[in-house]
Image 1 (spheres, rainbow, N blue to C red):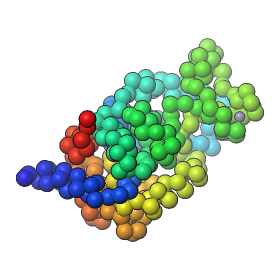
Image 2: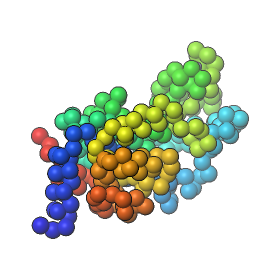
Image 3: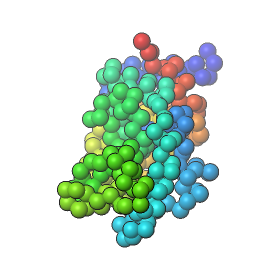
Length: 252
Ligand SMILES: [Zn+2]
């Protein structure tokens, strides 16, 4: 067997031996669907200084700028489809091998690939819809866009007059409490933690693999580039996600 075949065989048997896995995903799984990694060189965040949550709250002009950028960049996200990596993860959930998917991504591709909503834990929110920051009422982007594109009218909650924002967690915004708790308890309950497509450098998210490992779970890291946690992993694979996972997971 080649090194790569050997790695695939090891990952396959680790999944077989596991009774409760957790998948943790970062930008790398979605770049294979054409979604740019916003933090990478040349990504949107290196061209524009990100709008901090406090500036968004403090200034109508910042809120307008934020919606302008959102609608200008949205076509890519709207067109993106789940790739083989997402489908393999969905299959593992369907087979009962994986109890939940914790993700740093905001693109909703895990749900689109067939993972039920209640099995996806979004640490950074979701950019495919918006919500009132006060009462949480959900709003669809198309409705906001239709009004905004006429004369840049900012969306206001029809239920409580609150400020509406895409349902993502911005820089300067607190991590979502319920999601962080759910991610932690899922991590504590698993016997296999699969970190896929994350550089594992953004805290607090990057703490989960360490928690899993310390708690006795096996840790697998699959990422194109080496990560700072490779040294504590039981298996670290540096390869494309879709091709690797489709070699590991049997599709019908
Ligand atoms: Zn509201």
